[in-house]
Image 1: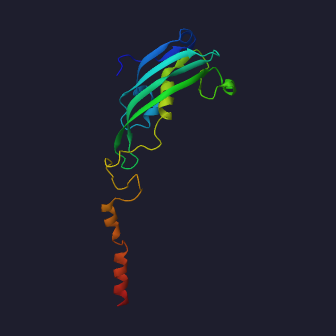
Image 2: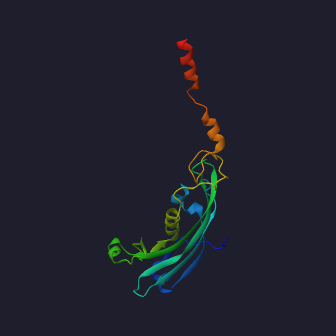
Image 3: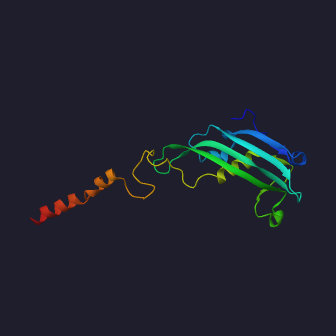
Length: 178
């Protein structure tokens, strides 16, 4: 883990003019929107950001982030550790009118003033890279009933299900007819 923390914000005029690079961490406590997806809200996100001007003088934020987070398994609802990693490739826009001129390989980030909130950028990227469904690897899940490969119940559950749940009703029906 990095010892340095990312600043709360950067001045976009200065950082792009200097072609700045920031490397550090952001505490998950600074990301309230992302915390709603987590079981354990402690931890940090490792971030590397490069602020460059491309050949068309567009302000580009590129870099990467990674975090080890704890989500709820969608099968057993127990905690599962997931490693999130993502590449960042954003174009800093001053307003939404610039969207129509944006290159296809860039994602927009609108910043109407000179202060760019770095935690917001990191938080949005983390939310976007969350898995659609999080679950333990097969065999590690507490539920262990459904095979992820076949979608079928495990053998022990199949044998339990083999008994007809309406057998009691069948017995009652036989008793009344006699």
